[in-house]
Length: 588
Image 1 (spheres, rainbow, N blue to C red):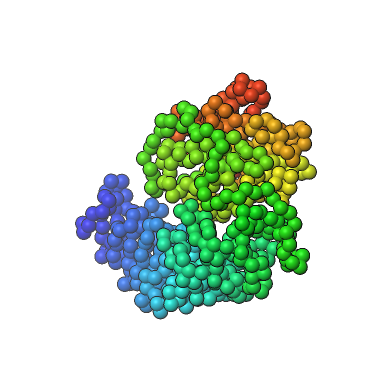
Image 2 (image 1 turned 30 degrees about the vertical axis):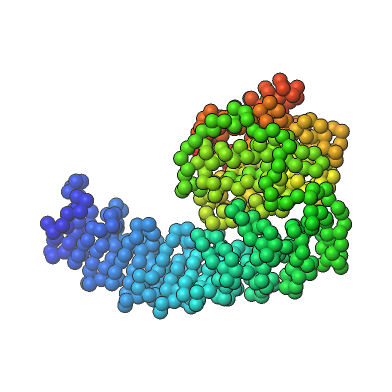
């Protein structure tokens, strides 16, 4: 007996070695090899004629023949095993019994990450590239200091040379952005955000100047001279000069304008305090406290104001001021406390819209602020993972959605999202569709100035998220919390069609069909939000969605009849993928 490992002993016969399992009393490797080493069970290193192979003692089969200088098993990368010959490395698939990469790369430089398969990082002569093990082809040549394959970026691959970043398209086999930028952001509709002079600190890029590159041509369509570029629509990019991001990731200060991505020129001056993307030829801009709609000059020939929107002159960055009493009910006191989970992958985005010029929403700010406290204290979210948007304009709603997208991209399927909304919902009476109303929106022109619920579900549903839970303390019948109709609505409530959630999404809504989402004046909250908070308080956040839904629906239905003499029936709509398991899901 020469060695013992996990009750395995090396046995010899005719000067050949094998392995015997003394616990089972069976020969697990026949005596056919010059040398046997039990190292990475169930895989055993074998050698014949001075060449190494691999044997699986569970299947009793030789999975790599003895024709390599070395075979190196990484259990996290199985079924792929490193092989070497002539001091060069390759890769072997022990399930198919085939070489997937021949031994021609720098020794011990092939990196297999299961999240990026079938793409494998390779290195030759100190330079990195990328290999597709399904096609057997080198898809990025070994010309770069570093190559990073990230699943959410595909088909684009990060490349670096001389400390500068670029992008390579592995589908076309072309370098689409040369290595001359300090940072490159996401690629949306063939346009990539590029940055010169900024620093990447823990995934957040600070400082420097931003531009955009067309990945099809490699042309810089927006020069790198802006402090931010928010969105591109109708061939116009919304750009900022002089602004900076606050703790919530929102761009504050500075001035906004528009750049034509066809020419790279500022076609609308950078002079606005706020500017939104163009939609159907118009965009909302704010200057000196006044909000205006302007036409797309690429379509109309010049940028002219077409409508004056309701607005109040106030500092857009100042905290929202509620016209209602501060929260002081039972759910606002003795909020259960739990230890902050700094490793949590749960993020909360809270929109609380109260101060509409045409019709305020009673207690909406109370709702959002106290829900934030429950997220932090009861669910244990770090404060940096909670974003509260008070009196959100359409720009802030868009920013919230964009931030959710950034989280989804960064966490690659591991993030969970809570999206809470308290405010007005408005129907489009022509199509019976539902819309969120920003505080700078106009309920009489909701399809131009609002945010479509259908669009929201579509945008979020296609993200790579573990789950997304939406709470809507709003109704879409055209009614207010006080049961009056919005000025723009007809004399009767409108019953909108239910929008279907997408992806891994569950939507909790405050009311059904043509019902109104009422307030609970005595408690200083929306009726739906009060009982949502109450259940979180009673259970310290440890409640599954089935129990939460049953409780909130039962209590809201009863109290609405008693307090408001009106029906209000909360609903839960899961996406198709969660139809059979949403009831067991939890926030905590």
